[in-house]
Image 1 (cartoon, rainbow, N blue to C red):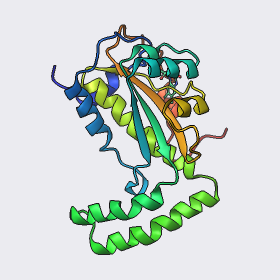
Image 2 (cartoon, rainbow, N blue to C red):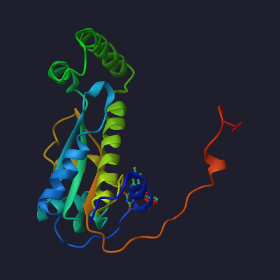
Image 3 (cartoon, rainbow, N blue to C red):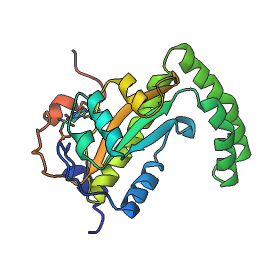
Image 4 (cartoon, protein in one colour):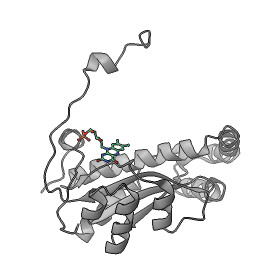
Length: 214
Ligand SMILES: Cc1cc2nc3c(=O)[nH]c(=O)nc-3n(C[C@H](O)[C@H](O)[C@H](O)COP(=O)(O)O)c2cc1C
């Protein structure tokens, strides 16, 4: 099958509740991972740490900490989108050098990023927002995964329904306070396609220039 275009993938996507046991072929899984990693992020710091859960016992454990939702048990792979909220300090220098070596960022911009990004990150830290900002980045990456998977003939469901401490235990991060979980994303071959539950009318959600009074 030819990959679906982005608009076609957006229109075809549904939250899949049940998956076939069929595995994802390794070339497709590799492509999905590559496409996920192209995602943009604040300062290009890529705070995500994506754990692929495929082992049967670990899927069962994930099922237990996800309110026994069937998707993580049935799907052959669940992408656990974790973030490391403290890694930016370590990741900043090699990221800048990579952009410099690629010729993407001139020296002057590299210096700006090296000076300004830490101020920004320390400001977020002081305001208690480092976690929120890292999670924004991870959600954008997860959205890349979702649309890429749809384009490649697979199904997904974003999942907020889990106990964070339990998921951290399953992925071996129980004693790491710098790790947070953004979302679980089971990926596989849909058993059935759920109906579209619909959306509010455009006029109720999109406004010109300013919000109407609340
Ligand atoms: C961030 C997020 C978390 C969600 N968590 C769950 C979940 O834990 N379990 C579930 O079955 N569906 C979950 N959903 C799916 C939503 O219920 C679904 O997107 C919504 O009903 C619209 O249906 P559609 O995705 O088929 O358009 C989640 C969706 C998002 C975006």
